[in-house]
Length: 572
Image (tube, rainbow, N blue to C red):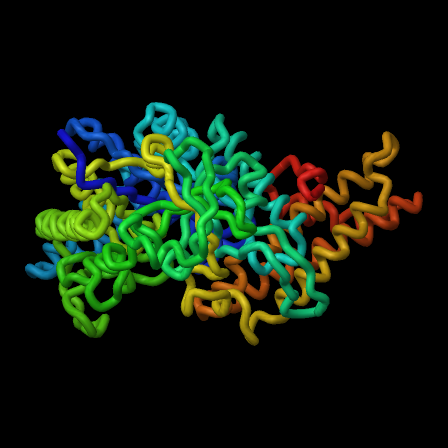
């Protein structure tokens, strides 16, 4: 097989906010249970099925540290096992309800209830067979060369808006440390939260501290921790600036070029999402590779108007039987169809429909590669980035679609299915570019995570960053007798990391869980303030009160991930 046309790089971004010990339903641990049952276990099944059918998965999956910290925690394992048992019992209960009606409509519901009972029974057996360790199951497949796993910031902190570079370093360092601890190795690929990037140069905080300061480009902060490649939205490359070429590729021989080089030599692939680049915003050789998402290919899946999941045969996400934790029995039916008019779902016709959509998607990938070959004469790379939870959770038939796409392209003589790390190794970028600031959010900027609705979050967070920097500089935690102070600062550091999650402004801005987002941020901010005040008091040699001891215990009970915080993560 020549595989001369180019590469297909599938990237799934697996992430959920920290929810253990912070509610169950409708917002809280059920988010995690649903994702594990409907996305992560099915994706593991897809990997194994592709191998069984003679293929190689060859995709890249990001498992954010805050996600694997939760999936690997005993509290999750026990709760998830109970959740799967409850799902099976609910399916049996629904079947009993449906069987009491003697008509064709309810006979089909009986059949679907039996389907769900088998589905969740299989998941329970699968979970037990992997010793209830989902991160280890993914790590095993990565170690065998089947997939690549990415790391990310510890709690999905939004890097361009964090006040201090020390906070970005801590997020990256804590994330790499967590991935290494749970997976057994340190990934070299990195998912920048929300694909958000900020180049080097002057920066003025949008709130509280109005003084401008020069910042290091995010690419350097990441590269310092051993990261070799990241993923960005297409407009960051399309609006970038030519800085240099590497000739031959991978040699490290950097040749400076003018900012008009891309316009003068378009055949080299400048500004094109199908040609990964090296990134450097200070004019020198690139330190980190960047893969840009192909929007035209990706919209085939995520677009609300033309996306595959909107097909009438697929399972409807929003309509459930009963109240809390109800199972789903209806199909999409059609665009704009009211929930009350949804028709019953049948899983078997969806297999053919998922295969049909997979073939359409594969043809779109090849079309884009042909287009790039005609323009440049080079092998290209189509990079398709999606939230992992789209496949299985939001789009129940999504894992089957992934299986068919990967198998189809695996056997295609013109296309190589490859991980991002493999592409970097075997076909390293030959161009260095400077990218503008931006994200993959609405408008391509920071408006989803910074706006009038969440401005107060950043005011609180910036003051917390400044206080933490001051106290870790002034308090005697490095001294042999400073153990108690160090322990309190470590707990405060954990709360600071949890405050910085991009999820809290996102769910507030999007109206998905406004009260929950506000509650979670303020709880972490309150615990941070309490712990910092207690640390100052202990540093003065004063004893803690019973109430202060309960405040420390409150943080320990609720915030159980990242068990070992290293205050040196914040050192420049």
